[in-house]
Image 1 (spheres, one colour):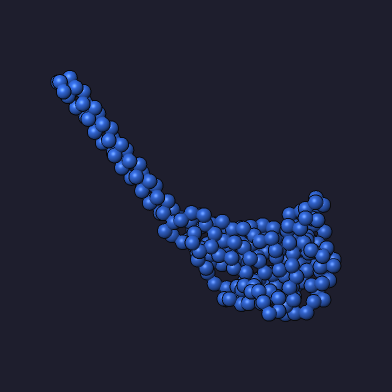
Image 2: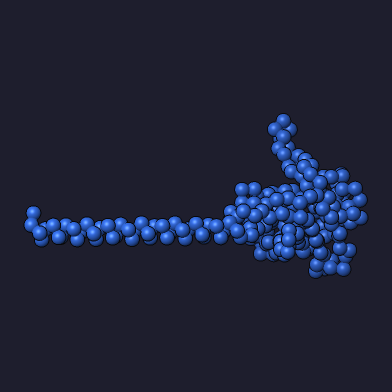
Amino acid sequence: MNGTDEGATGSRRMSFESVHKWSATLAAVVALAFSIYNFAELQKKPKIDVTLPHLLRTGPVDNGVVFQIQPTVSTRFKTQDVEVIRDAHLQLTPVGSISSLKKPIFYWHETGTYVYDFSSDEVNYRWTSDPAPFVVSQDKPQQPTLAFWADNWTFQPGQYEGSLRLSRSENHSPLIENFCLIISKGAANEIRGAAQRRIFFFRDDLPKFHSSGKSPQCYRRETD
């Protein structure tokens, strides 16, 4: 091997080592950047999403009504902090032709769940806790059945504008989801004439109402 070949080989070796060093440095910089990004993301406050279900439940209880709603409360991002839902509020406001009617005053009475009973082939309500704060994190989404009671009140036929408000910790603004509910004359009569604690279902995804084009987003009785 002559001097020219040795020089070329040495040059290629130095070039390879230089590229290797730059590649290693670049990989280290990228890894550091990802570490910084992940650390920053973990320090962020969790972003909470609230989604209402397709089904609401209501019926007579004592001298008033119970209204049950099961929202999904979750966060899509992993953070070190968790969010605490401290309180829940439900509002129903009569609108349109019944706007002059008395507005119900709901309070969070309890939290429950529905459990399927194989022996009777029925879904039964079960109390799970008193109204109390609950924690939400990425690995712990919540789907509580929130039961609200309103005393000395019952439904009249017409449309209602509703809202579920979840109060959060610290200085965060509350989470609010709005909805509308249509009570037909038949549904109002059903509720008023029903036995205590009988539950009636209202849905917002019934095809026959979506195709009608009349307030398709509202919750209604399937039997309407």
